[in-house]
Image 1 (cartoon, rainbow, N blue to C red):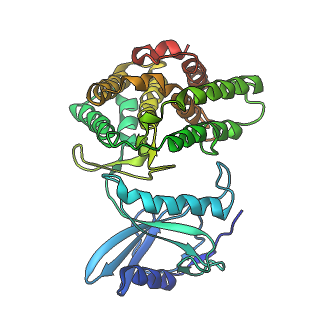
Image 2: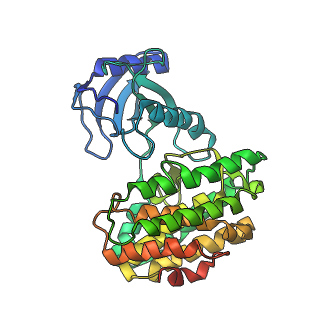
Image 3: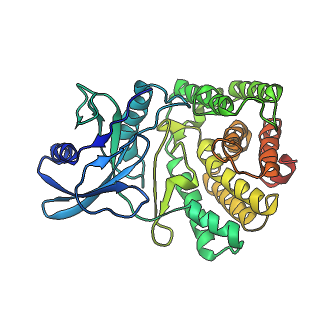
Length: 368
């Protein structure tokens, strides 16, 4: 539901940026993020939502870059323009409050005809404008390890840096019990979270039938009632701390991208979002948690538990691991995943929901 402009006019984009910076800018080039740089200021034919674009321009003689992002309609609670607007407005308000997060420059909207970009009076689809950051996404490190299995000192140091970052941001607490209750409720029922993920699985899914999904949902409702009593844990969070949202520069210096769903939440959200990927990659390489990925998983957890002093997290990670497990097991996100790996991930989802306390060293027993 929505519309797609056939052309993004560079003159309209230039006028918009000039209004944002309060002086005239000159656009040098516009191209899709991740593709080769395009010079010149031609209109973009076939512009579509959900594709981020790099905009290079001059301002007072200085060359600058920003990224213009929109959201693709459809599914996961993004169906209506108002759904997408809510997320982008929140992101603009929240990105700049989190240490190391890419800066948001502005939030705005395309006009109804799709030809112009302006303030929010006569708006159609919304967009967000962020600073451009260069570097390599963290998942490329994990891709390399999956190929070689050769762990370097830098790999270990980067893992520690990510764990340290969560320790630091989670120190900031907020006394607002009903907000914590809301975040736990959203974990279970939000369109992007557990029930939304389950709804995105295809009918007649081979590895888990309707009864199996119902059992997962029921177990998660039980967990909601346990966790809603732990509002003292409400902390500053990123909300989507996974390897595709972390941009490494030189050495262990990094920037985080695309903070999601709320400034405050449960620290287990961030910890599981990262560590599920060490499990995910390890299952693909070794068939269990082993080798280089087991080492990274252990480094991350041991460092976090030691420096945060948060032993209670092991009593609340279960539904968060279930959510993240449903993500990486999803045939939508990973259509070509080995069947055995997908089965083990779903075993992990069901088994972690059954334990009162998550044991960091018992992952391989949870996948069986």
